[in-house]
Length: 61
Image (cartoon, rainbow, N blue to C red):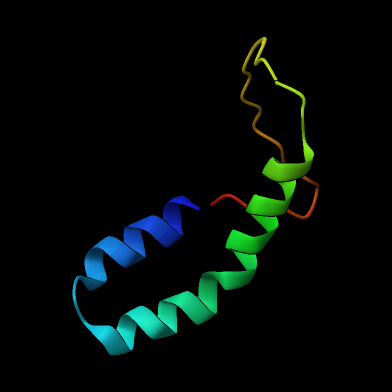
């Protein structure tokens, strides 16, 4: 959703680009509205953690 908003703000009043963006992001917006409309639950973030993951095939020169 943030990417969608950023794109729309950059487009400004260009009608052709607004149309292209609306077609591109329509499914994302519809999914978000569906989730928000069907969910009566409130989520609380209890914590945040960051992890660096690697697998044996990773190569770091």
